[in-house]
Length: 461
Image (cartoon, rainbow, N blue to C red; front, top):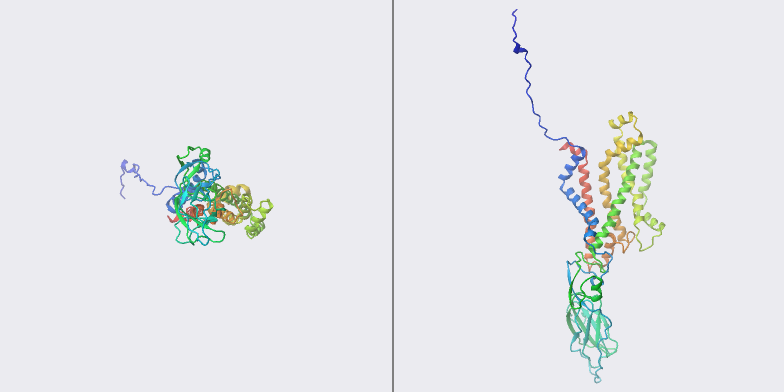
């Protein structure tokens, strides 16, 4: 047996090679990971920016666009969108004496003819058009018509404005909803029973104008004959001459207040109710869920009518509070059932059992451990509930059971715009567009949040 010799080097400590570990993917929290997935969803991110823009439009818009939404300008009734208008300042109309002349005699059996020409006194403006003409022999009175295009025949004379009452009257003042455009005026001579087979038509170009007193009220230069710049109406005006952009801004406050405040309340109620039912289970769960099933079966529209009657709100009055009450009292069961299902799963988790062993009370377990772990589905439910509430408000206001004029809301404005849809489509178009954009944005945001907050999506990446 040979003895091996060892040197001191054999007992020297081994040199350990250092290995550098590179973190391929940093550790992210649940909310950080959800935010990354939400940002990768372009539709949801675009919807989020749209929602933010709508909130800024609602809250800050009236400070930028300072026109009063209730201010009426009868000279701009149902006007289309315009960025600015130049207007002529004229004297206040006053009482026009008209033009009169002695009737011209005519031989018996002679047919009536047409007047030689039609003239206008002063300028033809949107405040008034004062017409006068030459007398027709044998005429007992004269009929006046107005058209927005040149008449092609005696059946196409347009709107009958009226008639003179005696042969001496040879003038007529038109002040009926004049707009800055061209009009064709027709004058027909008539006896007591027969109208002239021929007539005279004359075209006049009407200029936009405001009276001197109106210019003074608006703080504009009031020198007759001068031109002034009128306020712009980017969305046009309604049937009462009110600015649609200002009304859409203030209407957004009502619509979004109902659409956000009501869902916050009934989602909160449903969350607490469903959390308690799911945590305790057993007979308590059965009784509470049967109550929720009963509330779901209640007809919303019927209770909306009953609440309006109970609060003494009659036809034509705004029913904002009954609408809020009906939404809060009848829409919470859906959230309660969702939260209950989540709580039934979470209450069997190990961290809940550990907290129970350490002596945590029921209220602490529900509000500290269970409900915070269901915040993802709750947020998704909230984002889907908001467009539902906005659409409900718009529908009820549209049928006259929600917000009533003069209080603006998108639904009540759509109700007003439907009456003039053919002649002034912008009155319906703009509130309907805002309703559609808002509902679509919240729905797409809710769809994106549902994917972003789904914990199962994390393991697939």
